[in-house]
Amino acid sequence: MLRHLGADDRSSTRVRLVDAALACLARQGIAKTTVDDIARTARLSRATVYRTFPRGKEGILAAVVETEVARLFSSLAVAMGEASDLEDLLVAGMVESARQIRGHAALTYLLEHEPGTVLPYLTFGELDRLLLCAGDLAAPFFARWLEPDQASRAAEWAVRIVMAYCTDPAPDADLTDPVHTRALVRRFVLPGILALRIDGSPSTRFTSSNRPPTTIKGAAQ
Amino acid sequence: MTSDVRERLLQATYDCVGRWGLAKTTVEDAAREAGVSRATVYRYFPGGRDELISAVVGWEFSRFFLRLYQEVSDAESLEEVMERGLMFAHRALLEHEVLQRILVTEPEILLPRLTTEADQTRTLVAAFLAPYLVRHGMTEGPDLDGTADFLARMVLSYIASPGRWDLTDPGQVALLVRSELLAGIR
Image (cartoon, rainbow over all chains, first blue to last red; front, side, top):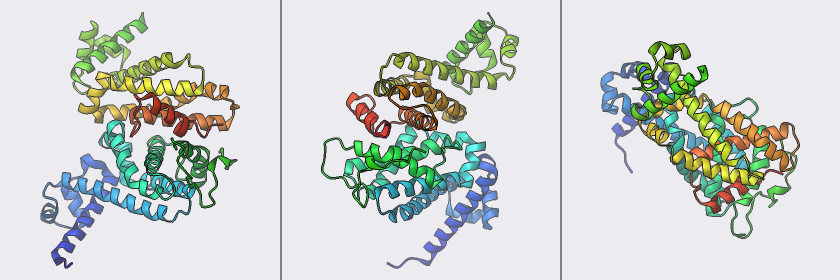
């Protein structure tokens, strides 16, 4: 399909503005960031900003969230796509998302200085929504090894674990560390997923070698 | 006597928050509600409104966990404490009118104050679970500490956001407990 030259222009302007907004948020948070700041950082005019985002700052912030979620999922898809068994899939997905979340400069700034702007989206009913969405998005990766219902629950659980550790970080519970995450996956997650099989449905393939996870030992810490 | 006044002030502040919300409750409101002077409020809470609001969030939080503790402290096994605790805590949160209203109207004020308590809460829940893990056959040490920490994180997560689990259904709670919570615990 042919695309208008203008459409590409608009999308690259959009990306420039989103990235400029991210830089501003990481430096000074939401309250202090103005449309002028974002325009200056992007080296674009105010008029261009409002042509791309007629709602101004509010529209840019919505685009920031949308873009960052899409970026997170595409990096997760790459990390998880390379996994050759369920254990590797869980470790890759959890480590990659923990790294993206903990290493996100704008999110880190907001959680520290303006937590009220972010936490409502990461707790209680909104976390429920996020768990359902993220679980649905991740489920197809799990479906290679699990029954559909088990895949949805397993995917949701993995997302839940990442959120529980990222919103309440502790030095001895760091999911960005693959060694730690693998131990956690072997110890709790694989046996838990096995037990999610309610009805004794037929062979559930957990690893490439078809090894039941309950026999994996020595992963306590 | 002094703790009486403090308790009375916290209860009065809580009542005001229930009526007017976190942002609109003032030192004057709390003083009037408790039947004390403004000066008395400042004697107990020198930081004024801000300190009073933080204190009342912490106070109600502790009361919630005390009720939860009383509800499950006679449980005999790890499975039982998990199942009863999840069901009670989830129902209590849903039925907590002040919390539910503020989550809709002023989450940006409440949630940062709740998360500053996250570390302490998790430690509290983990310490409560540790003896049940010992009774379950684990020996004390880093493995038990790590397991209690994991379970505390999970329990707190499910209580506030059950996702696709229905925590009012005993069958689902039993499955949740024996899969995502306890399957990995020897």
